[in-house]
Image (cartoon, rainbow, N blue to C red):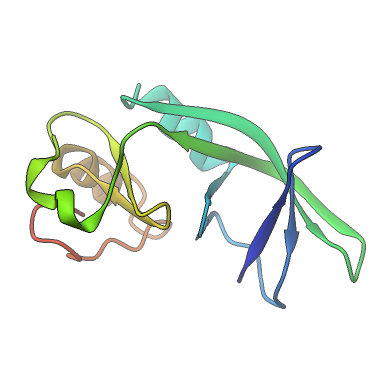
Length: 127
């Protein structure tokens, strides 16, 4: 499902019909449901800051206020793939759209939240 960030108030408007999930990733945003965000926040992940967020379905008027926007400081583009640091616990965003986790963080996520995150081997060094 697609979302569009409304700059003025921390809301994300739904741009497609669909269900909200515990993790919402799209161009320019990564949102975690509060339960997931709180767990991740307790891991002290390098370069991760969380801000309150709400998903809004304009058509129905329903708001889902139980989300947090992940502000991730580690960004890279596909041509930088061989030059990035993947040590420690960190999320990385490629081209402001694709979320990656360092191997250490991937292991923790797979063990603690296997049903929430869909981990794939998109690039050989990441989860």
